[in-house]
Length: 384
Image (cartoon, helix red, strand yellow):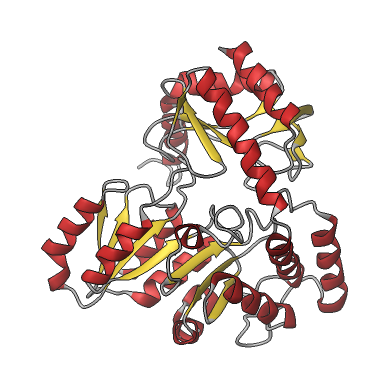
């Protein structure tokens, strides 16, 4: 028999052959519109820091103050020794912003979905999920032991067909969807989805990770954007437009009280660090009080979209700060991204298995200037 770990090398070789192999890139100033990437100065179009808040001096000061007062870590689960004043302050602020009764903050968005979905459904239940859902939603569903069915991306007719066929055989049903799909940038058809869910007595969990801070009159997300009642399970992250770290779930007071006792990834995990919590709390206040940040972001999005259209590039449908263009197969997409980087622009090649088809993903930030957008478009002209 071969060495027990011998299979790892052959698996890595398979990733290289398929063009799926990935590795990290060391960067400095990663929260900025310009960064130093592996020793080169480039424009940053790969960050989820949509409002440029991760380097905002107010977030940095709040984190430093929390470090001095509360220390570097929460030191334990929040049910034991890890509860700190900023935790509840942040939860109350998020709940108010999202139009909900209460909120629970997790140490990451992935942990939130890993804990919430198995707390809501089990082996006697059904989960219906969009095929393009984030990995954390898929992992949470697998962990729950519920029967899982996937419907084609955004296809509400197929979702309804699956419910007609399967809903009656299960105790509970949960529909899970991203609101903004992170690798495409398009929006879930939430009004129709919620209408279908109500008819079939389904719970709904929406992942607002890439919508929070970006969509809606106050930046509260896609539910606010569509003018929908917030009476469902709202999950999101603190690590994108809010510039910090962590995840959250907002909902009814009863739901949050239940999750405090049943969400294992919250009960058995050290609380979010005080510094991250304080930074996120400051970010929420900034987003709610400074709508001009979102205005600048959407101006930049419109400028880049217009540039792509002018060049007749294949732009995937988008309603967010994520813009993706298709330039060919896996190898062509990788070479396109490499050429952009040589031209001074960092925009990653997103390839299988992360997505079904390869694309270049551009993340737009409020801190990009019009000149930076034009430099990106000029770099694309050179590569083309």
